[in-house]
Length: 87
Image (cartoon, rainbow, N blue to C red):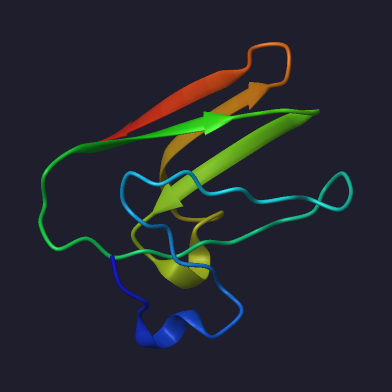
């Protein structure tokens, strides 16, 4: 994956097959991560929730992921992990 021009310097890039950790400071915080793929093959993203709960939106429009999300998932620390299959 590569950094895309509209991502800005403060948005982290998700590397393939490498765990990425994002920490939220307080309830209700939003962290946005942008990525671009080099093909249209389906893929899965696995999320591990260590504390509290997590809601995830994945979309095709980087500036409107929450309002125009296509794939969604949620989980909590009591579940441990959840997966979103993107097709």
